[in-house]
Image (cartoon, rainbow, N blue to C red):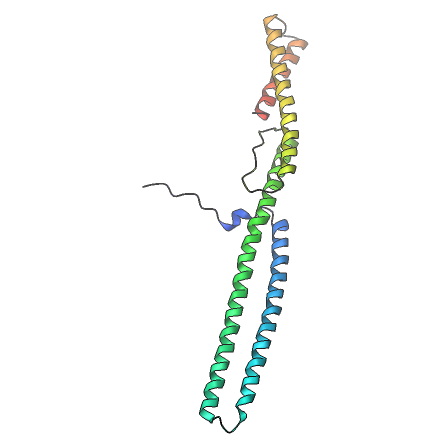
Length: 200
């Protein structure tokens, strides 16, 4: 049996609730209000047209049963139009909301990653910065951050190599052992090992 592919849930697209939901809710409310106003104007015009038709049926040439049938048909048509507009409006709001969640995710994703790397830097860790996913926004900003991070990481890596070379040279020359200098060499080696894990 083959392995099923990884399915992303909607919650995976919401990385920064305060950023994403604020824009999603605002734009959704505005679009819902506009859809409601436009829908009301369309329904109002349709209702006026229906009333105009009904007013023409007051003559004696229209039997009551025919008049009632026409009014029922017109009313049913108006109700159907109202339901269709309501359904379309709700559908548009849902589609727009989902689209905005995905689009804001493309902005929040890079910001979330940069924030995570800053948190690591705060504790001295300089792990490799990976490129953004295809379609993510803020690429120029992220590339500038990555360039800065890679420069600092390379500097730390060079320092680790220099500490290691110095320690090896001291051992080869027989420098160290008990005493203050030997203790300092042990501290340097411990610091080098720690820094090595931080840039790994």
